[in-house]
Structures are given as structure tokens and as C-alpha cells.
Image 1 (cartoon, rainbow, N blue to C red):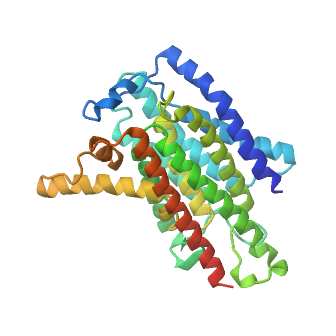
Image 2: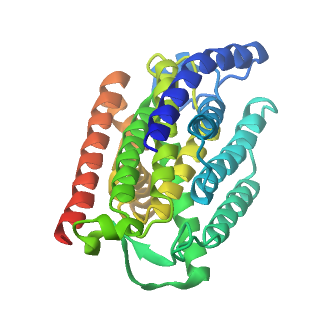
Image 3: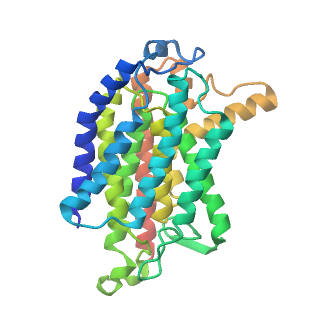
Length: 357
């Protein structure tokens, strides 16, 4: 069954490696180029016109890799896997409409704020409600109404509060990835690291699943997750697809992911966290996205309260560019920060399992 993980990752990588340049040619031919802010670092002016909406490449590659891995291995898709992919596709569709209006219709702000929010709410609510359906033989639904860190804890918050909590997570992480996607390869490379970690988590949860309690050395440390192996298959497909896209997205980028990609990545990362019962842990695992989001919150809050800015420019990566760091230097150092966050997150995940032994 582990072959699914290998197949999905390799197929995702292959599809974006060969598919992204085809998408670049298509977008360039139609003139769908990126709009660049005039108040940003001057070096970014040269990026004006670079094809965007590249998220199409890894969204389609991930979905294809998942289902092809099922066909090759003769396995059946699970509700958890399909729900997470559906969340990614839905959020990506909202981002695509935003990009399309910005670039094709030449309306610089894209979708109106209310329309964009409405789209995200519809997709998020649909995911949250459906994730509480489809019980398996053990009575587990894809999601749980309990909060989770490395496993569920505390008491149930009920379906209504769960939907509100899921929406908050989806919107927050999507916004975080969107803000991070400001330098060539930054958000893509950071995402590769997080999806790699979630591949490991899914495999570990599958091996230590409570469904196999009779064969475990310590049944008390098992995981009640509905489809952990399939979540690992999705994460592996995402890791491979993003890695292939990074080949073309790294500096100097031949294509940008756009809101199409950033909203999709934020959505699917949240979906993996909710369905793997690691909701609070994702704030550590995706620490770079949280850090960059907080830099914007601090900048806006400080300016409104005191009239002064804390950073030369927000999001945080542009602050360091204006301090004189090269774009590649900022990206690589931020990748290192993201790598540290992933290592800490995985360490806490393992420590929680070991503590229960």
C-alpha cells in the first residue's frame, strides 16, 4: 500500500516538470502577465509581465497524481483524500477567478472583496460540513469536532463551532501563503517542506493506527484518524507537484503561482491538518507563513495606532530586500527558517507519541 505514496509523488513531480513549460507558453501567448506593485523593491520591476496563474499546473498535477496512483495500485480513493483535494480545487478556483479578473479583465484589484470572501466561505463551509460525514466502520469521520494538536484533546466544540474554526484556519493559512508568495520560489519551496512532513505524519499515523491496535506494542499511543495513509498519498502528490513547479518558479521565475496557487496551497495544508488531527501543530509546521502574516498584522497595527512603521515594508521578506539582501538570499534563509519549523513540528509530533508509550 505504501507504493501509492511513491507513485503519487513521482507522478506529481513528472507532470509539473513537463506540464509547467507548456502552461508558460500558453499564458505568454495570451499575454497573461503579472502586475507588479510600484511601491515594492525596484528590482521587482523586471518581473512585470511574467506569466502567472501557475497554480493551475500543480493543482491539476496533484489531482492527476492522486487518482493515477489509485489506478496503478488498484486502491480505492477515500473520502478524506477526495475532500482535501476538493478543498484545494475549490480554493484554487476562487484564486483563479481573482487572477483572471486582474490580468485578463485588467481590473487591478481582481475579484471584489465581498465576492472573494463569499467564494472562500462557500468552499470552506462545504469542506467543513462534509468532513463530519462519512463514518467508517469504527465510527470515525474524516474530521473531528474536538480541537487537536498532535491528536484530539479536550471536549467536542460541536459542529457549528467546528465549521467556524475550520473557516478561520482555512482563511488564515490561505492568507499566509498568499502573503508569502512575494519572491521567486519562496512559497513553493516552503510548501514542499511542509507537505514532506505531512507525508511522514500520514505514514506514521497509519502504522500506529488504532484500527491495528491488536498488533501494536502500545495500543494506548495509537491514532484515531480515518484515512491516514491516503492523506500521506495526497501530501506526497503535493510535494512532488510543488517540487516540479519550483524548477520553473525559482529565481529568476519563468512563472508565478498567483492567487490560484497560493489560495489552493493554504486550503489544502489546512485540510491536511484538520483531517490528520494536527490543527494547532500546523501553526508550527507552517511557521514561516504565520511569521509573515504576523509581520503584516504588526505593521498595520503599529501604523494605525502610532503612525509609525515597524518594518521598512511588509510582508517581512520585502523588509529584508529593502535592507539590501538579494532576493535569493532572502528566499534561501526563509527556507531555512521553514525547515527549522518543520523539524520542531515533527519533533513535537514524535515526542507526543513517545510520551504516551
